[in-house]
Amino acid sequence: MALLALIALGFIACSKSRNRKSTFYINGIEYETRKFEYSETDRVGTGHELADMVYSGKQHESDIYVGFGFYLPYFPKAGQFPLRRYKQSGNAVLGIILDKEMYLVPSHNTSIVWATEEDGLGKYVIEPTWLRIQLPDPNDSSKAIEGNDSIHFSAIIY
Image 1 (spheres, rainbow, N blue to C red):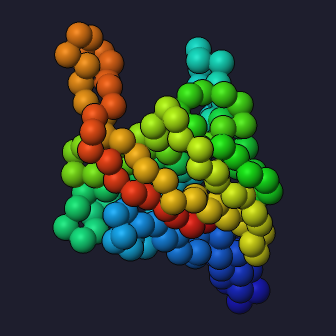
Image 2 (cartoon, helix red, strand yellow; image 1 turned 180 degrees about the vertical axis):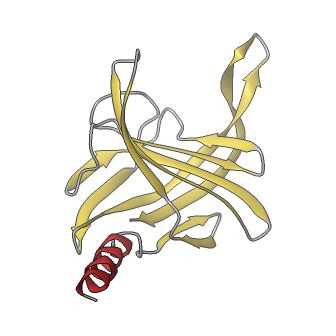
C-alpha cells in the first residue's frame, strides 16, 4: 500500500511539470497544447548548443509544426533573449511549418523572448512577431530565400 502511494506521488510529481498549457497565436487564431517536447543537445559538428522544444499536431484543420529554442545548453528561467535567425549563443530561435509551408524569423527581426519561472517551470513569452515564408532558391536548390508571404505569431510556452 505504501509502495502504491509512493508510485502515485511520483506520477503526480512527474505529470505536474507537463500539465501547463502552452498557447500560441498564428494570424490571430488561438492554438493550445500540452504537447511541447523538450531536448537539450550539443549539435555535434556545428559548435552550437541548442535547448529546443517542438510541437507537431493538427488544430483548426491545419497541420502545424512549431520549433522554438535557445542557443544555450539549457532552458533559461530568467532574462530576455533576442529572437534571431542566426546561430549565436544567447539568441532565441523560432520556425513554423504551417500546412507544408515553412516560416522563419526574418533577418531584420527585433522581437524579444522573455524567460521567467512559474511554479518551478520555465515560461517563455514570445512577443508578437512576423515570420516570412521560405522558398527554394532558384539558383541553389540546397538553400531557401525569404518570400513575400508572412504570418503573425506570438506565444506563451511552458
